[in-house]
Amino acid sequence: MDRSSNNSTRSSSWTLKQDKAFESALNKYNKDTPDRWHNIAKEVGGKTIEEVKNRYQDLLHDVQNIEAGRVPFPYNWAM
Image (cartoon, helix red, strand yellow):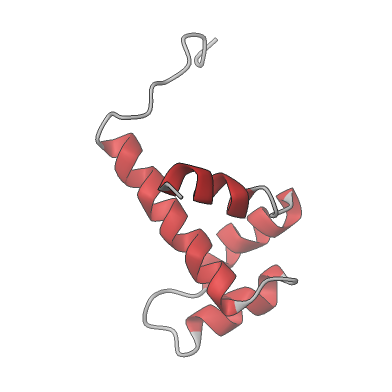
Protein backbone atom coordinates (compact mmCIF):
# COMPACT_ATOMS: atom_id res chain seq x y z
CA MET A 1 0.00 0.00 0.00
CA ASP A 2 1.42 3.40 -0.90
CA ARG A 3 1.64 6.18 1.68
CA SER A 4 -1.02 8.40 0.10
CA SER A 5 -3.74 5.76 0.24
CA ASN A 6 -2.69 4.91 3.79
CA ASN A 7 -2.98 8.59 4.76
CA SER A 8 -6.45 8.93 3.33
CA THR A 9 -7.61 5.78 5.09
CA ARG A 10 -6.41 7.05 8.44
CA SER A 11 -7.52 10.64 7.99
CA SER A 12 -11.04 9.73 6.86
CA SER A 13 -11.78 8.25 10.26
CA TRP A 14 -11.07 11.51 12.13
CA THR A 15 -13.91 13.92 12.81
CA LEU A 16 -13.54 17.68 12.58
CA LYS A 17 -13.93 17.85 16.37
CA GLN A 18 -11.09 15.33 16.83
CA ASP A 19 -8.89 17.25 14.39
CA LYS A 20 -9.43 20.48 16.30
CA ALA A 21 -8.76 18.75 19.62
CA PHE A 22 -5.61 17.22 18.13
CA GLU A 23 -4.32 20.61 16.95
CA SER A 24 -5.08 22.18 20.32
CA ALA A 25 -3.40 19.34 22.22
CA LEU A 26 -0.29 19.55 20.03
CA ASN A 27 0.06 23.18 21.05
CA LYS A 28 -0.58 22.37 24.69
CA TYR A 29 1.79 19.38 25.00
CA ASN A 30 5.20 20.02 23.44
CA LYS A 31 7.83 17.39 22.70
CA ASP A 32 9.28 17.68 26.21
CA THR A 33 5.98 16.95 27.98
CA PRO A 34 6.03 13.66 29.88
CA ASP A 35 3.43 11.23 28.49
CA ARG A 36 2.81 13.62 25.60
CA TRP A 37 1.07 11.12 23.32
CA HIS A 38 -1.06 9.73 26.13
CA ASN A 39 -2.21 13.25 27.01
CA ILE A 40 -2.95 14.14 23.40
CA ALA A 41 -4.91 10.92 22.82
CA LYS A 42 -6.91 11.58 25.98
CA GLU A 43 -7.83 15.08 24.81
CA VAL A 44 -8.74 13.92 21.30
CA GLY A 45 -11.00 11.15 22.57
CA GLY A 46 -11.71 7.91 20.75
CA LYS A 47 -8.16 7.52 19.45
CA THR A 48 -5.30 5.37 20.66
CA ILE A 49 -1.80 6.63 21.32
CA GLU A 50 -0.69 4.88 18.13
CA GLU A 51 -3.42 6.58 16.07
CA VAL A 52 -2.40 9.97 17.45
CA LYS A 53 1.27 9.31 16.65
CA ASN A 54 0.34 8.22 13.13
CA ARG A 55 -1.72 11.37 12.66
CA TYR A 56 1.26 13.46 13.73
CA GLN A 57 3.55 11.64 11.28
CA ASP A 58 0.99 12.26 8.51
CA LEU A 59 0.93 15.94 9.44
CA LEU A 60 4.73 16.15 9.29
CA HIS A 61 4.70 14.45 5.90
CA ASP A 62 2.09 16.92 4.60
CA VAL A 63 4.10 19.90 5.85
CA GLN A 64 7.24 18.56 4.18
CA ASN A 65 5.36 18.22 0.88
CA ILE A 66 3.99 21.75 1.15
CA GLU A 67 7.40 23.21 1.99
CA ALA A 68 8.97 21.32 -0.91
CA GLY A 69 6.40 22.78 -3.30
CA ARG A 70 4.86 19.39 -4.11
CA VAL A 71 1.36 20.53 -3.16
CA PRO A 72 -0.12 22.98 -5.65
CA PHE A 73 -2.21 25.83 -4.30
CA PRO A 74 -5.69 26.18 -5.79
CA TYR A 75 -5.86 28.90 -8.40
CA ASN A 76 -8.53 30.93 -6.57
CA TRP A 77 -7.27 30.33 -3.04
CA ALA A 78 -6.84 34.06 -2.28
CA MET A 79 -10.15 35.14 -3.74
